[in-house]
Length: 245
Image (cartoon, rainbow, N blue to C red; front, side, top):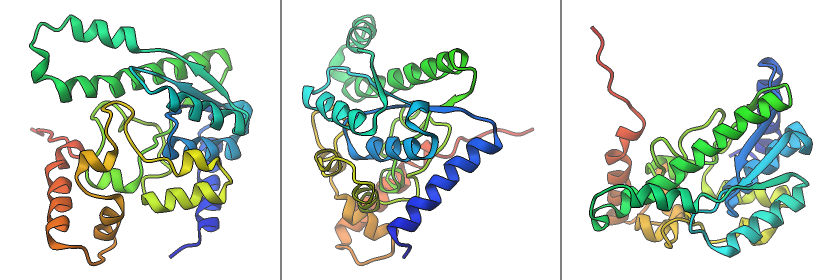
């Protein structure tokens, strides 16, 4: 297994090489107050310089503590943190859909990451024009989330570059520790900031067990089957069937 310092150095070089080879300038990403966006923000700040990284806090019926953690991180990294409140936009969208909302709990939750991603890409295009260079939107999903399809189509799975997609949750935490990021953020219980539940509560399995299944380690049979079912049932999120004549 690679040492975390090696992974860190390889990711920094990966980012720098991609930006250099494609004549790119900066990055703009949502800062949720959690570990994944914190580590991604830290990596891009190291790779590109703090002047070329912009964080966005995009509340939508969000917890106040998440803002404080997002601000803690942005202050630590020295990057700008722009706030754009999506609550009213979300409420108006939902209110104008003439369907009984009790049938739309999951659908309503998925609106939020889609609104956030639209906002990020709008600002990426805007800052690309303002600063005369292309700004990308980095993804923040880790390997465990991706394995079980824990993301929203057209939302948090949309990105221009991925740096955590081959790292398990524990590897992300170790990387955050290695980078010296605030422990309040790195060790925070992961949740989507949308549903009021932790990730593991929603999934019904732990990230440690997901990592074990990915790595071929022993896991209780019932838990293993549940993880494999999540993996299989969410393949439609990865593979778009396309008719070819």
